[in-house]
Amino acid sequence: MDTKQLLSKKKGYGIFVFMGILCAFLWKAEKDLAAWGNIVWTGNYIVGILAFSLIVGGLAGGCICFLVYAQAEGKWSGLWKRVCEKCGRQIGNCENRNLKNWQVFLAGMAFIVLCWLPAYLAYYPGICSYDTTVQLAQIVEGTFNDHHPIAHTLLLKWAMELGEGMFDSVNTGIGILVALQMVFLAAAFAYGISVLHKFQVKPVWIIMVLVYCMIYPFHWYMSISTIKDTIFSAFFLLQMVSFCVLLLQGEALSFFNRSAALFVVGTVGMILFRNNGKYAMLVLLVFLLLTLWRGKKNRRLWGRLMIYALAGFLVGNIMVSAVYELTDARQGDKREMLSMPIQQLARCMIYHGGVGVLAEDDNTMSGEDKALINDFLLDESYKEYRPDISDPVKRHTNTYVVRYRAKEFISTYLGLLAEYPGDFINAALATNAGYLSPSDVTHATINVNGRDTGLGYVQTRWVDAELNPQGIYKDSLWEGLREKLEKWADDNAYLNIPVLKYLFVPGSFLWLYLLLAGVLSVNKRYRMLLPLSLILGYYATLLLGPTVQLRYLYPVMIVLPFAGLLGNRK
Image 1 (cartoon, rainbow, N blue to C red):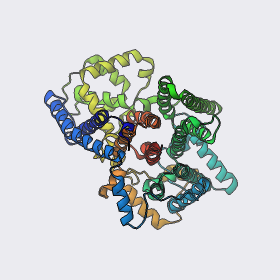
Image 2: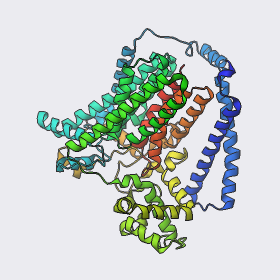
Image 3: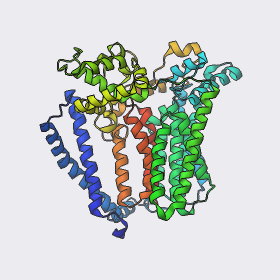
Image 4: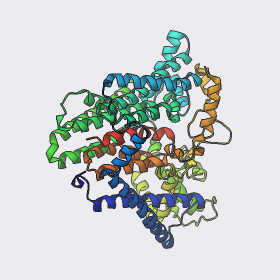
């Protein structure tokens, strides 16, 4: 391969060494924080962790960069060919273009649905966990708020009315909804697989992605869970894959085409089914605007992409507003957006507020700061502070303080940040440990309370007292399988799988995406970095969120193989 087509090695090694240093720094900091409970950011500690990061991270980043350049320069192609020949088949070079894209789509969807069907039968009518009971309460009371996407709450309402009206069984209606969303998610996967086929990705990779879609255990649980995240993830995947198609079509892109329509539909859907979807889109819009400004050679392409993105963004937000008005919904509490400040202020109080929770509390906080925090975090809820999740404190938050005393709140927040930066950093690291470090396992037990089952990393808890009165009850059609799946989910069995567990652990995915960004940069596939700006925007909302959960990360988990394979197509 012509090395002039690659990024200069000086820049390439700089990118990977920097990523290696950052990864080592966060891994070491998260490990120390978990072991000690608190990090005192003294000069000696900072020098020590920086030295560790520079040596270990720098070497690791450099080694990975060497391998990336070796692959990009074709130094492994002969080895791959010899392996294929030794196996008696030309896997690496085989071509099978007899199948049409629609045939690949239908076959892929059928295989995926058939593989997920046993889980659907085992948990029939579905896994009614997470926020389902809260949304059902809104439906029964007839009062909606936008804390949870109203579109999804209305979808649950439709399913209940359908079941009761046509089958005299709410349970049947929920079962129909779950079946439809399972097929929809499978269709999104199948669309991605058909696109891989269209752009002539090697069959071995297509088969591996298909197998991943069929047997990855979290797909089984998420596809049949009655939560907004499943439908959001399907739209997110549809949006990301169609965006990659538009970029690969490049200057040949016609203004009206199916991929553009799918991109707009995916954008509208992701905004409708998660409240943070619009914030992720804002980041993409900013990067598109910068590309339009700087990309003088392909302004026609960038302009059209900008039009598609703006159209999806505007239509999505208009539809959200319309649903809000039609249901006469109330504005939900915005404390979810304050999760990180809540954690940081609560941590400051227990370490410096003289509240008697910790022996190391130095009581150095001023009376004015304490007074504002007590107005913000009611009933001394900071005493319930948990490093890994904001909910215990968040549920007692008085958002009036932020809304109507904004200047005072911001002044106090920034003053405490300047006075106690280490505690602010520790609070952010502790809450986001599951996203930042592949070695973190606390994400698997965040919701375990010592009494209820079904609260592992995959939540399957069924609250009979809240679901049965609404006509929703367990009616497993394969009880033996349900018991096995329940045990796997509740015991977090994936953590016992050597090496492969990192395909399940959430902390792996940030670094896999950064690795992908580095590979694309080395190969000068700059335009294919644009879809990753959407991932960046979504990750930003996660890092400011209340805790680490599978359902939050699921969209970026399912997009990764498609973004990786399409990103490297010419």
